Length: 125
Image (cartoon, rainbow, N blue to C red):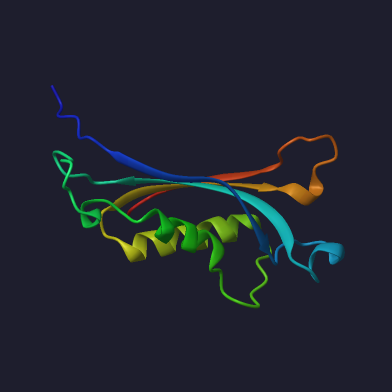
């Protein structure tokens, strides 16, 4: 029987971020609101005790920062590139990150409250 490894999932959900993105002329001049959610799968220690330090996990603010601290002045043609940037940054920040799941919704294009967007799931290579 194969051994099942435990996974710690950290998440930041439904964070609205203004991002320069889009392909149409009306989208290329001003940032537009994107609703982002990120789930990070990490290797985790065998046990978390009451006194386990933060270094055994990951600071949630690192995930939030990867979502909000995008390169200034960079226009991402596709929101897929925004998701790719976030995933690669999280892999670079911590070798314990095994998988990153980025979900992005383009709020500006919804006309009836629907959520139109993408999901990128990237495993560490």
